[in-house]
Image (cartoon, rainbow, N blue to C red; front, side, top):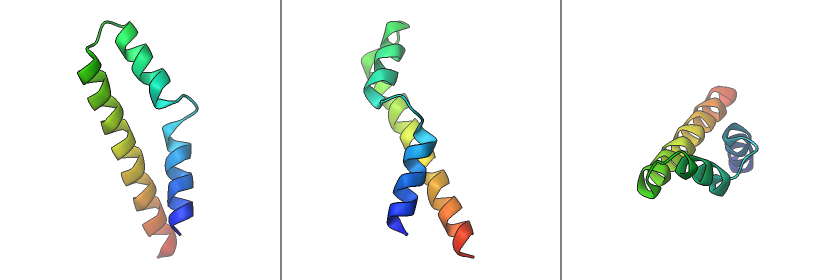
Length: 59
C-alpha cells in the first residue's frame, strides 16, 4: 500500500527533478527561498492527492 502511494506521488510530480524546477524558477528571477517554498508546496499537494487516491481505491 505504501509503495503504491509513493509510486503515485512520483508519477504526479512529473518528469523533471526538484532541482530542475528550482533552477527554472530561479532563472525567472524568483528568489531561492520562494522557489523552495513553491517546490515544497508542489510536493505536498502531489502527496496529498496520492494519499486521497489510495484511500479511494481501498473503499
